[in-house]
Amino acid sequence: MDVNQLKLLQCFAVGFFVNILMMSALSATEDIRPTFTHRPHILECNKSVLQLEMEKCGERFKTDMDEVDPQNWCNLTYFISQYHFFSACTEQNAERIGCFWPNPVVEHYIINIHKQFFSNCTVKSVVWGDPSEDTVTVLILIPVFLTLAMVALVVWCSKRSDILA
Image 1: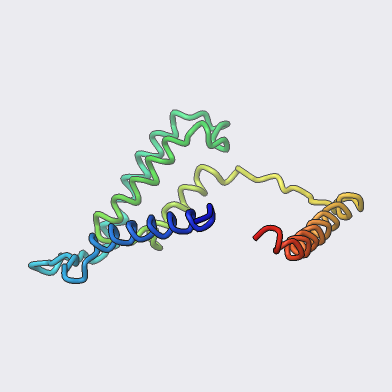
Image 2: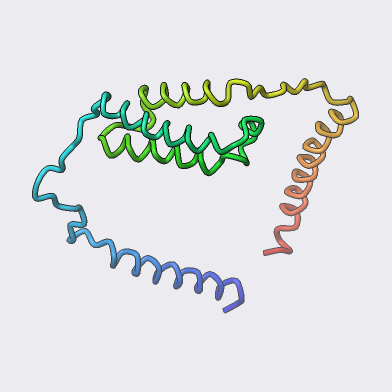
């Protein structure tokens, strides 16, 4: 028995034992589905209550933002924790009330908060230019040469299959 046959036998044995271990935990005779003795209570989204809860989250966010210098309102590092709390508050309250998050009510409120605090935060647009011809040439030639090298390697290996086997 040579080394390759021994490795093949080891792989087969390991695969066999892994298969036995996996299948023993997933027996078809066992019912692993959860059983409900009663139908779970499904809440219906109450948009007016949701709006009130969003206003509570917004008031807390406004109070927190009062502590941040307005010149730093466009720099997320100054108010990331306040914004995280606001976002988590809207999500938790929406789910508690039985509404999806985000939904139109929440999105509308968040947009209004953004308009109030972040309307002056404009992103400077970056003007993209074409790369130089040298850059384009290099980016084209690298995959071409790699493809040729891979083809040459496959042909060389196929010719040497009698030696490698």
